[in-house]
Length: 135
Image (tube, rainbow, N blue to C red; front, top):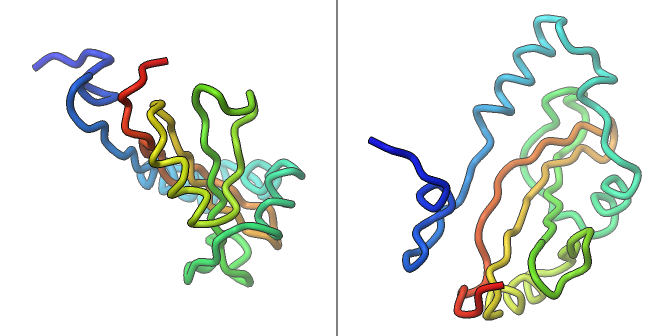
């Protein structure tokens, strides 16, 4: 079996797939619980990510795995052609639906964030757009 970059991203004519980062998350949490990572190592969210988490984050039912006092929120960013270099922070389902209908190939990154202790981890990456325009 071979692995080529186009197979990982999704075939050029077929649908691209979602990437889930649960295994990486488990590994980081295991290292934290073993004492190999400090709280400062894992609770290091950028101030702009914290602002987005507090103001436009989507609430979840998941407790923070570090402080266990707060619920996690999901913050979504979309990157691709004709978007700002730093991506676009998604503030509503309507905005995400609008971007999903674009002809460009876009990628949405969903980050889980604790608004209390600053834990953050990339949860998943998924394709957006219909890919009819290659850019």
